[in-house]
Amino acid sequence: MSFFGFGKKKKILVVEDEPYIAQGLEARLQLEGYDVITAGDGKEGVSQARSERPDLVIMDLMMPKVNGFDACKMLKADDKTKKIPIIVLTAMKTLGNTDDAFTSGADAFLAKPFKNERLLEKIQKLIDPYKELK
Amino acid sequence: MKNENQEIARLQKELGDMQWASQKTNDGIKILYKDLERKNEELKKLDRLRSKFVATVSHELRTPLTIIVQAIENLLTGAFGPVTDSQRLWLGRINDNADHLNGLLSEILDLSKLEGGQEERKLECFDIGELIHRSIDNMQPLAQNKNVALVLKTSNKLPKIWGSSRQLIQVITNLVGNALKFTPPKGQIEIAFENNESNVRVSVSDTGPGINREDLEKIFDPFVQSENGHSEHGPTKGIGLGLTICREIMTLHKGRIWAESEPGRGSHFIFEMPTERKQ
Image 1 (cartoon, each protein chain N blue to C red):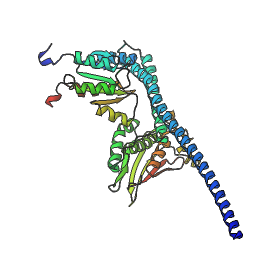
Image 2: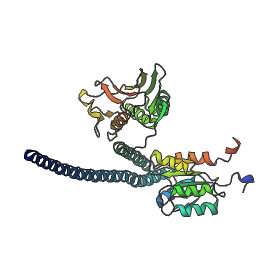
Image 3: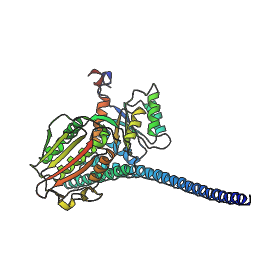
């Protein structure tokens, strides 16, 4: 592990109930050099975020048990996880939906189907290690 | 005295008849009212169903599309191993068509929401000139790719208008997008705007093949494309809802949209809407 954690692989938690989307994201993010962990619903996502402390969370909205809106709120209400940036993914592309996602604490929003490049741009912006210095 | 009694009896009978008729009318109104209430409930139920349908279709169709788009992208990036040139070519074709499918899906859902009055409209006062500038800037890369000049011609500063900026961006993007589809390389698309005391008028003119006179009205109807609607790469893709969506949006803004063209002389799409809040 390098000094101050620079050069350390960033860890991303993918919370998505559709296994093929989760696997696809995992493959691409690993190719980009990220460590990837996955959760199949909002409840598991929140508990993984609390125990694994990822650098970023990618969150689907329509999920069983705990949906993405509520999972975002739970993460942002918890001191241990509130600083972890969240990118929300949704197949329900409406303006109201975007607003709801942001009020529930999401830091960025992407409508499905999305281009991986767009997602990678958003990830980089949110977990750039030099962000604080700029 | 007898006559008076007879008269009273007659009046009483008349009154009774009137009361009876009034009762009947009241009963009739009650039945009609109940009927209206029932119909209103049915309509509300239909509206909820439609709303649910749009949401479900949106979710259920976009999820498999996401899997397809992602798998293709991953294959193309080599995440699942090396790809041959011919595989790359076909993956590219699948990708283009998945994009196309997504575009069509968005058009259908947009129109369905607009017609059902479910489109959430955030009304605000905004600078339409600035909005046009921004929309055009966003489309410059597409125009450069096609080697088409995208020119903004402004005469004066436009006033602020009331409406949904998101919907207005959609109108401008649809019109310029159409013009880009139909304009051959080295052609030009000109966006001009002007205003008088009560209206703003925006026009998008291209140097494409133009539209037959008999099609000028029809192209705003759903699922209609102009006979001349062939771009350089064969028939242009699209389901023919873009202009219908534009017209719906203009109606919501108390404005209007129309086309002027002659085959071989390009097309002009013009929309006009009030600057003051009339909605």
